Image (cartoon, rainbow, N blue to C red):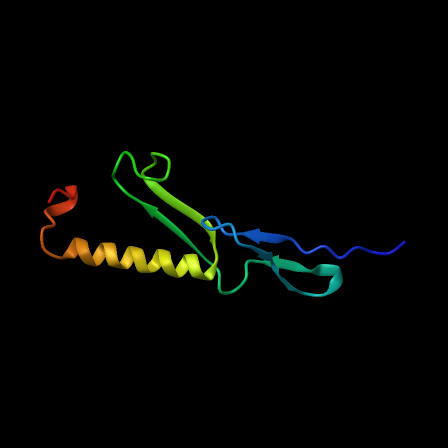
Length: 94
């Protein structure tokens, strides 16, 4: 009987892109990991509700390269804006 070689897949938590995980090691002791260009994002805030289901945090464990870069760029832009004019302390009131 032939042996089936199965490689697990990983799915982006934001856009749904699905790819095979990276394989390392020998056939008898293989290890699977997230592709190197993929990232993750975890952010906790003080708001009681947000656009992602009413939670005060974002937790994306698996993000493809494109979504990981977009998340970093969006966070950087939001933080830069918060440092700018019109920001009135930690409550976020403008």
